[in-house]
Image (cartoon, rainbow, N blue to C red; front, side, top):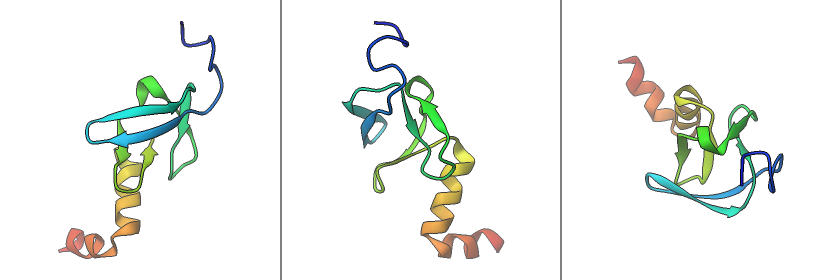
Length: 78
């Protein structure tokens, strides 16, 4: 099945694991938890296992981490 068949333009439901993810409901993409932008599954590289959410890129991942852990912001300034 190619990328445009079957689950096509639907959003996938994913279970995020350490170093991998499991597709629970087939789809072509997931939405970044920070930006809301679509991330094609074949380009998904950043996610949080603890929060079970995907990120578009490293910057989005860091932004969420700083948001969830304000103490990290203090450490980054020193």
